Amino acid sequence: MKSYLLLLYRLTIYNVKVIFGNKFVYFVVAAFLFFAFIILLTIFDDAEFDEAVIYGFLVFPGLLLIFYPIAYGIQNDDDSKMLETIFGIPNYRYKVWLVRFVLTIGIATVILFVLGNIANLTLYQFSIVPMISQVLFPIAFLSSLGFMLSTLIKNGNGTAIVLVIISFIFFLFAEPLEYSVYNIFLNPFSEPTKMSEFIWLTIVYKNRMYLIILSILCLLYGMFNLQFREKFV
Image (cartoon, rainbow, N blue to C red; front, side, top):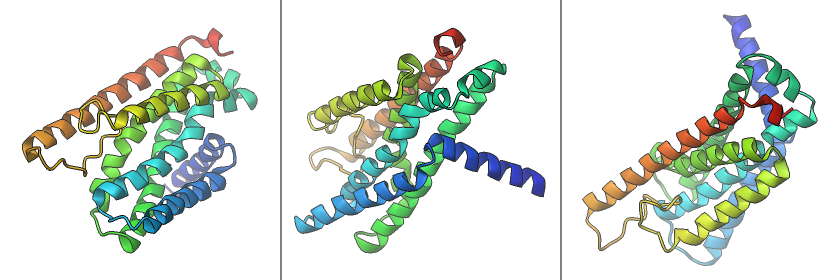
């Protein structure tokens, strides 16, 4: 059992290094600095803190954490000459990239819990588990979308550019679709005053279900693209 746990630990550490290109510390520091920056801006504006504001604070560092590993995952394997090896073992590519995808989301979740506790202690008291659970919906969707794009574009810079453009478009429509089920960045804690609670909960539920379904479809389509070995190597 001890040997198995040690192997699992080493495997996790190795994949984390691959995922973040040996720059894991920089991404963590960047997430914390970005989080501190937006908090300071809000404090200087004398804004009132509530769960809706905290939700917005946590979404952006989460997106920052998943951006690089999702966009550059395949290119990093290509640059390190590991792509041929991964495709050379039957079904191994699915295990490798699915594990890395889960690790990316898992690491982002842990760091968001830390940021959430900091916000809970310094800004506004809220229930951390429901908050982080809601924050993970748009993060998981954009992670799945980025993974699918990386299997289509097969270039880190190209994937990053397309993902930034798509995310920017989502942000542009976030305000016009503020209370719509089609808003990727729907804030479940920003309940409109002139809407019944039942209708609002229905909108949030449908929005989250759409994000789950779209995330699964993007992930499955990305895995489907990985069947065509000749397009990658």
